Length: 324
Image (cartoon, rainbow, N blue to C red; front, top):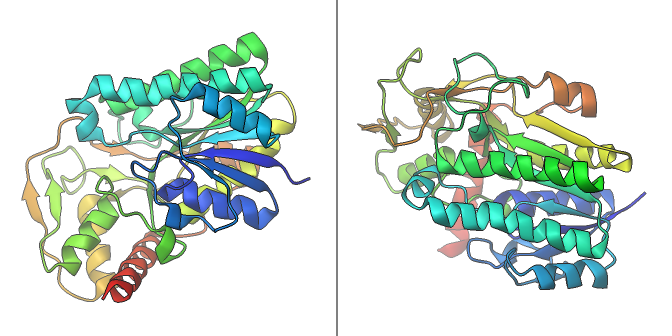
């Protein structure tokens, strides 16, 4: 049966893709976004947009009640690891207090279904083996700490009130369904590398002295379309009591230098990255064990790294052509 969702941060990159996926299933969506990083052009004209911060508890509660919404998908958050190292207080305020505000609004409105955007950053510096949802969570940067604190808060609220929730731990999200939804931020490797190549510049690689096969960081890259589908699939768990945490990744790691080689193959030109010092807070390798999400949701990623880079490149070329 179709449901009605509030999507915080729904004008953002991942939120925008998930709004599209929910509506394709027939669900109704209301977006709450302050547009500090989101873009209203990502939304179809018939999607209601409430321009407000997740810190505006009264506005959120009123929106939930006015639209008689069934649940919340909470995407709105700050997500830059280097920025979190420089501004930890800001990240705790936006990511943890923001989540508390949304949960407070849910309690006021009697909304009991919640999907939370968590992150693989909660695992911290792993051994290089694929991490399960039961692996130790020892974040190495404030961004990861705030995401883990969000999971703790959800668990506390669940125990106190019976809130039904799924926390999805994203690995490295990239790609695009269409140019309008593409990632235009400056926090993710694939779009940053492609933007540099499009300008005729050398993409930056932060460190090649990690304990990995080629010295560069290793990450699990998941297509944003697959991630959006995982959110839609996760809603089925909320029909009954639920306090679930699931990895969302492909289950295979690629090094930053391998990503650069994929970029070169997709754009069909040589790419010689510029190697600089490590960034603070970057773990060497984080790769998902995706067994549990397959068992619980029947979900698996459909796209590989070439698909991810190719879709992001096509979106960039399309936007450039439209702007010219």
